[in-house]
Length: 188
Image (cartoon, helix red, strand yellow):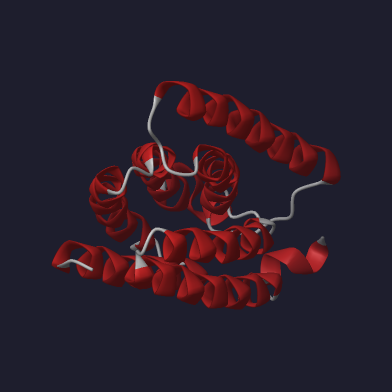
């Protein structure tokens, strides 16, 4: 464990908690966290996770814009459910990214756990996009992913990060419960 990992983990807890509370400050704080974690994951040869953090940086900016843009401030803050077809489309895209990235990492890098890391990356992109769009389904997907991330980080001896993702799992459950009570969902 390093001071950098501790700082990034602390920012991660703050960012995810703010997301549950639908506070737009989750995005700039999350941006700093993902940039720090991209370096941490590079150092332990989790290259798919490193790339994921860099994509998260872009998605953090997208989420911040989605949640705060003045032309749709009312719309931008409402939680919605995905219909079955868009949900299945998102999951299929996650699978496609997982397979392509896993093949690339297994073939061209010395990545640790290239297939698992790639699968977590592919589906995390879907969950993050859904979160930026305030889709309720982001939370159950995060719960599943975070549990698997915990195992991966324990395997890689990133114990603080494993603990962070265990906490993320609990916060994701809380997010799912809170967002389900959002008044905007009452009519759906």
